[in-house]
Amino acid sequence: MDLQTRKLNFIQEFLRLKNEDLINKLEHLLRSEKQKQFEENINPMNLDDFNEMIDAAERDSKNNNVIPARDLKKEIDSWQ
Image (spheres, helix red, strand yellow):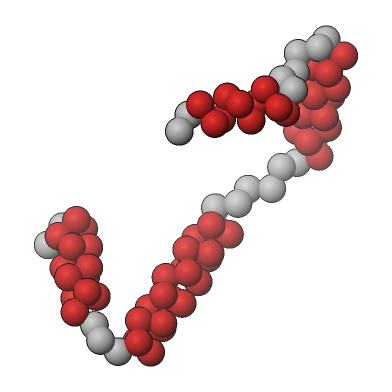
């Protein structure tokens, strides 16, 4: 059985649940597993890369290569 079929079967089974305690446990399990996966995929930045990002940001600021926050908010609002 492929993953997509397994997910659909799980959803169908989940929709049939009437036990709120079991639903709470499944929700908790899902949240904690997603958090674990997220934490496992975090790659800390080394100090040289971090300092380079700061230097680049300062260069952009000095060269007026920035977007004001209000303009950025307007642009983001237009995405919706």
